Image (spheres, rainbow, N blue to C red):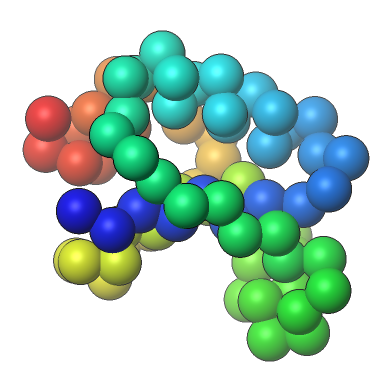
Length: 75
């Protein structure tokens, strides 16, 4: 399962999202900071944090809770 959390530096909502992913007991995921990437900034700038399932090309936008994450991943 390929999961990416898109986030920003110094982002309070991103910190909350990391807490939620821990509560959901999420398997491994990568973190990508969008701050210095114009393409990612254009795609995710107003949406971060965003959890992306690369295997299914699906995205879960904030706000989400642990139950929503598990449901999104089919756990």
